[in-house]
Amino acid sequence: LALSQISPMPLRCPVSDCNEIVCSREVLHHILSNHSSCSISKEDIHLAFESERSILLLNVDKLKPTKTVCLGILLYGGKRNDPAGLPTDRGISHPSYFDKQFKQEQLLIKHLPVLILARRCSLHDWLKEKDLPFRHKTLAEAYTLEPVVARPARRHDIDVLLVWTLSSTCSKRLHVTMTAYDDTMSESRSAIRAVSNSGVRKYEIEGEQMPFSKHAMWLTWYEVENLIAGGDKKHINLELILHEDFP
Image 1: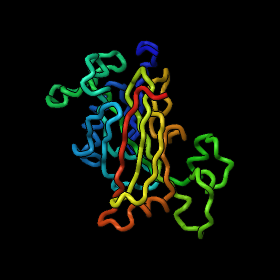
Image 2: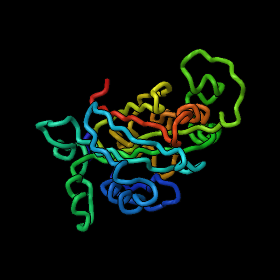
Image 3: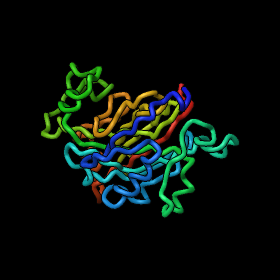
């Protein structure tokens, strides 16, 4: 897939309560200009390279029901020290655009911005919006690949946390390994998913649309509570590893 084959149409910002329409090259500029004060900080922006891990803290208090938030940004640089250069040099993405006053950010224009997004919602709403392959299964069968173990029903089991990634225009399909774990690393959940909007001619997700199952790692709120139990603060450790050459 060549960059010239990808739709140049702009897209709506995926963050809730922001309906601004931006072109793909302006996504990073828009997020830093409009959402850095209320959603993400400089600590949530990571230089990311092929098969190298990035870790951020997912603050559970940020998650408001039915609202999509940007947890952070991965600035993908391809393979570290690749003689072919950064993604823009290799022709798999366009350079990002910044206003002139963003002097330090000019150094980032050749990296591919990948947004880390999260949303707390009900399982019913997600299944209703997306025609997921497991929509007719029971909740227990849907969220685990292990044998179902009977346990008492809990009030929050219908609530789920979705975590997914969304890239600017990119001619190669990227994948991401996501692992959520607690402070003691005794509880974890991991998944390998496609980075939405990468390597496709038309946007897979636009605006506040919820992700497809191939894009999102999801946890029931019961699992979220297990991950934050025993910690001093309500946060989950989230590890992300980007893969460009994925089988």
